[in-house]
Image (tube, rainbow, N blue to C red; front, side, top):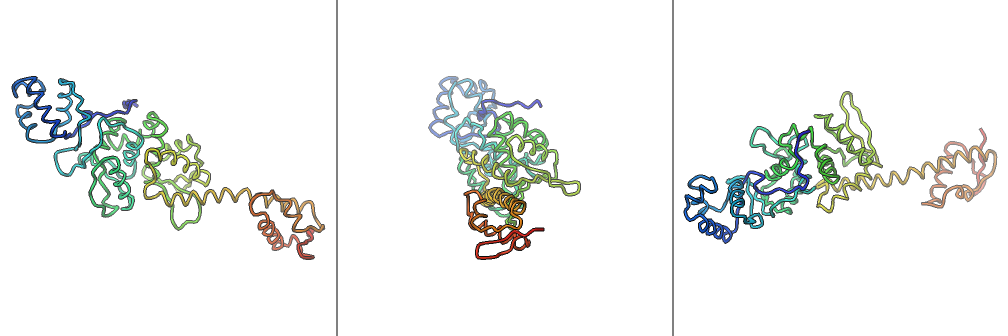
Length: 374
């Protein structure tokens, strides 16, 4: 793969197309500095290799294109990045303003949001590469809250999942600049490999975003298993399976005719929980799906706790049947076969009750039984 990976993960405003806004005081100082340096407006425009009306426009509008900003910085050696108070993708009001600091450090949180482009509908190649995320309204609200926390001013209302929400173009542009993936086809093919080169936490951010979009966790189901779907791209699902293997998440294929999905068992769910918990330092979580996932984790822990207890009861029953035929045993003796762990009294009575139903022992006195022969 020939995509360029930027190891430092730093993005300057001139690395991406858009418009920046400087404080009025800073802009006035810049204008005075350019006039003092070049004397005439014509000389300023010529030095910057910009249109003749650029400098006059600078005085009356508050936005500077990032290409012009780069030229200004290169000839004045001023660190204007620290003065930027807003970034807009375009001049129009449709742009979602970013009021955070430049340069942007592309961390796993930015990658997490960018990786929502892996889902069924994502970056449209037809209209300005519009980046739309389709999820339930409660999920959209959680994502908007997250965007606002990282200094995007997102004020659009949420209506339906079918309409989705527009993820800021800055997220797409920064993500594409760092990863080299600027189309949906490239993202589908290479996002896992690129995430691996960026580092472990970026891989987990991808896995978390994919999980939010594609996990099946029915609220009505009482079992702890989780499924991951991507019927439109089984090759991508195979790669997700390899990623789960690298992180020791237990899974299997759940086949349905020529289709299949990933089934994650109780042990795998608990491992996923540990992995996702490690992302909290970046404010990454499962958004609106966090609550139901934690219910699955709780069920998984209960399941894994019960399994060895059930196996212990099975083992004790076999021992009694093989070694105590036609002998009298008491309830206390049966209890002693159990390890001194959780709820021995209840489980020993349950074992006795089960063996009675199977006609394997007979009560001869209170708390005493004879083991029947075949």
